[in-house]
Length: 224
Ligand SMILES: Cc1cc2nc3c(=O)[nH]c(=O)nc-3n(C[C@H](O)[C@H](O)[C@H](O)COP(=O)(O)O)c2cc1C
Picture (cartoon, rainbow, N blue to C red):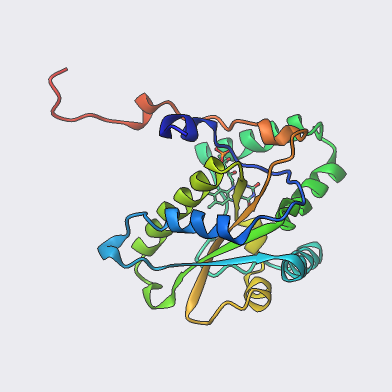
């Protein structure tokens, strides 16, 4: 697929077929993703690919804790909530998804949707993305993880696989760590739910809006 088309077509997928994803395909996707640049070529990333029973245990543990009102346990510093324009964008995409799914203002259905997120949208595979703890204070490591993860979701899309990068799935990171056997010398950054997209699932057609490039860029030193 041509790169421009790939980037324009890709969107987050939140409804999956239960079909398994072959290991060879996942390996190829990770291989392509790992072509990402990294600071000083440190390549600080690791990918823990989880499916079947261990993934079900992660979903169950995550959901139970969140239902019981446990505080999120993230391994990277994330404090407070979005404000201003960032909050507006967060609300906008949430409403787009609620509208597509016919959820509207229904509180019980909103809670169901949120819980679905904590179960990683029932995807057959979750890839937990981690980085080396020895780089904990080197925040460029976060940059490297973003680059490799974007490469991963694009390579997946090119192979007919949907993904959603999601913080919800690792909201209780110690549960994830235990069931995915993540070693102590790695920090859990995020996870990527992956699988073949359901055809008739309205949220899968939602295109999140983007700020036009003209508003993102300031040119300096150009003639006009
Ligand atoms: C770091 C990160 C965390 C995210 N966490 C979640 C999440 O917990 N739940 C969810 O539904 N989407 C999550 N997303 C997906 C974003 O909502 C989505 O990428 C954004 O709305 C743009 O939509 P698009 O991916 O369809 O282009 C996350 C994306 C990123 C990059």
